[in-house]
Each structure stands twice: as structure tokens, then as C-alpha cells.
Length: 137
Image (cartoon, rainbow, N blue to C red; front, side, top):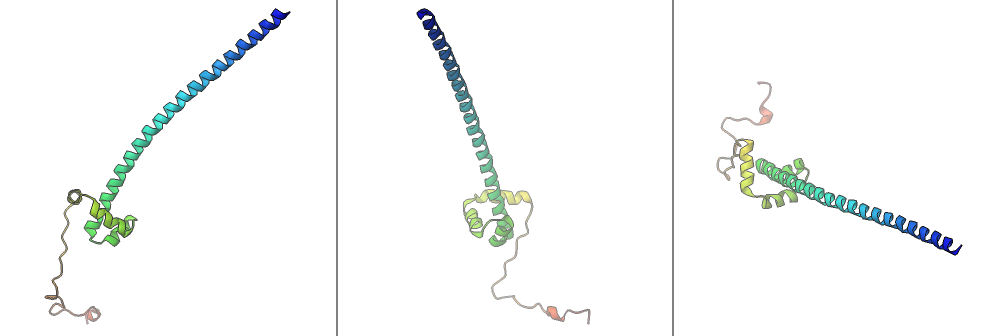
């Protein structure tokens, strides 16, 4: 009877050890799957961060090009949905040659004339004030 109890105990111990080995293998496998998933996540995040960086740089360049064409940082900021300080900071940080290239790629821009200070500013000979322009009186 004692040997039977001993054999049963040994069999129960071996069965328990087998279950424990299976549990350890399951933990090892799940740890490997988790490590692989974390590795893929890091790669995906790095790829997305690079895409976001490229998109942000393109947006920054587009904002500076808009501000350059409009010659009005406030209007460019309003149209771009950023604040004026951001537009001005971008104008200082973005490479001017890239801005010129982008402006040229968009097409020709007619330069605005600058007013002469004092001289030549005033009514044109024969011009009437806007209030005088009626229905042809």
C-alpha cells in the first residue's frame, strides 16, 4: 500500500511538473509575441513620426510661402490657422532658398510697387472724389 501511495504521489508530481512546464512555455511564447509586437510598434511609430515631421515641414514651408506672397503675416496666420508669432518664427527659421523655389514653382508673381515717400502721392489730375462719381451727371 505504501508503494502505491508513493507511485500516486510521483505520478501526481510529474503531472504537476508537466502543467508547470506548459505554463512556462506559454509565458515564454507570449513574451516573444509581446516583444515582437513592441518592436513592430516602435517601427510603426518611427515611420509615423517621420511622416509627421515631413508633413509639418511641408506645412511650415507652405505657411511661409503664403506669408511671403501676401506680404502680410497677420492675414497669412489667419488663413493658415496659426498665430502671427508662429508665422514670424517660421519666416526666420525656414530656408529662404526653399521659399524662393516654391514661389517660383507656383508661378510668376507681379511685384507690388512701393509708394514713394511724399512725392507723387495725391490726387491724379482730373480725378474726382468717389462721392462725385454718380450716374453720369
